[in-house]
Amino acid sequence: MTDMMTEWQTTHRQQEEGALALLDVLREGIQYRLPTLSWTVTYGGVLLAEARKEDTARADFQAWAEHLRMQPEDRSQDGRTVLRGVTEDGVPGRGRRVRIILIAKFYEPAQPVPVAG
Image (cartoon, rainbow, N blue to C red; front, side, top):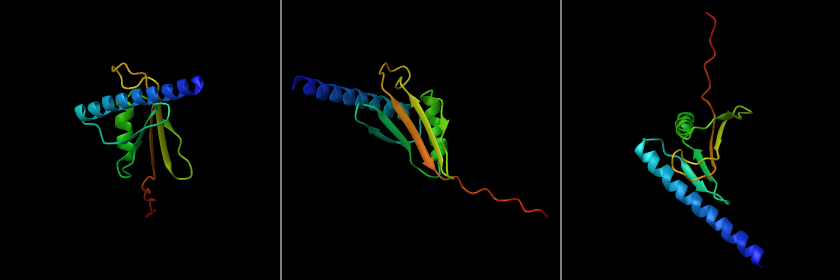
């Protein structure tokens, strides 16, 4: 019973730390006029940030990846663009060591095929 209670308490503490880190990122989003993302505090306190606006997903992702000092990965496949960035350091300068996962999934507009004239 004690082990289960300890795990339960640990998970809640991790989620609490994630929620506090979320307040940090929301405040920085306002301060630095960053695009709005969809944020989730997951099990274990990880922050999941999703750039969901189809027409600005790439730019929104890039703005936050740069702000959070992430090295983005391009995991695109089957015509769908998938961008992902991960940091274990939380928001730079805030002192909360929270994992943040930033993702964007979208379809690029089709490029016109040049016609030989």
